[in-house]
Image (cartoon, rainbow, N blue to C red; front, top):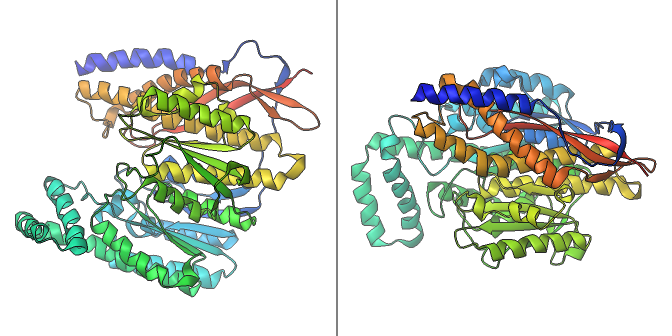
Length: 558
């Protein structure tokens, strides 16, 4: 049966591959001739990036959004980076960073990459004390050798769930309960919780518990060392993120100690930030450095799709949506304002769950449309509690005729912190670019870069994550294939997904992109006339996809 499925898959892939190779033209576009929109590539600065890992959110997104600020991002060679479960070449990365820093204006460095070799490796604690010492020494050396280099670092507090290694996997559920109870006992001193914790401790092998506790202790010591480096001026900025968690657990205890320490040092208020999230942290660091470097602090009005949304605690998050929004805006250097008229942009946050009916979604879409009709810039965060398409706002935005090409940002991938951080960064950098352009207006190439990143977010965060990926995973599982370990089937599944995404890209293009205009230069006006999409799976799994949409334009006849 598996062979029959793969045979059918090959036939489907061949058909879709031919369709995907075509440029998706829309009919009835009034255009005199195809137009080449000049690339927007001013180089205000060069930033060296040591990413958290090799996935697109940690690499591609940063590089692409940096271009909105006229910043060139230099990434390590692929052979030095991690590849799914294979950690990065840490020694090679340290030497690469030392070399590239010499010609850079700033560096954004994942300490977990230098110590452990990537996010997945950091969950296993593969780095040693010597690795941590080497990473810290390198940061010290870079500051001494290149005093003009603005050095930003970020570090991640490990997730609540114990890593999926063979030794600990069978105790994941008990270790989760152990971690939550450990925090709850400290907070409430409930005798019943204390008894439960003692019973659990007796059921879990000491080696598993000690390894879990040691992971957090080593991480805590390293983070305090990094905070001291920020306090001493070695680091121009430090962001400490928190991997997947709950409202209670050992990660929260580590975070609380760090937050208490930082709060008693007012000088660190604009230099050290403690937030939730992992994948988006480098992006938010870049956004802060770029915006503040240009002297820009966005004024942001936050609106929600319904009254309960701000207080909702979403999956994998330790606190409310509103608090996450406040954290990400603080990193961006933003100021909250109450009215859209006083804002540089409105961040519209939608929270969908099983109780979110069509009426709520329709009203939310109309609210977004109304804000845009009133002349306000709007970025959309489109979250779903269960990661279901029917809980999301995008289909209703399309149905209500919202001009998606005028959005400042769109994000709805993975966790709340991922989405909010990405949307805030995109909207802030684009707003800063518009501010920088003044009355003359920005060049068309800037709009092209903004629109292509926006198109990628729409296709990835909704069409892939909410539509294609669930369908593909269900089919793979039906034929006993593991979506997290594609093995020899990687290329065929990759091609299959590419074909499915080409269909979705065509649908998005025809419904929301074709014929939309953007300003030109010298009185010219351009219209979107085509969309070409490249896609591939960066790792041996379907969890994420890398997309590269290219928009074509034509010059409108007057």
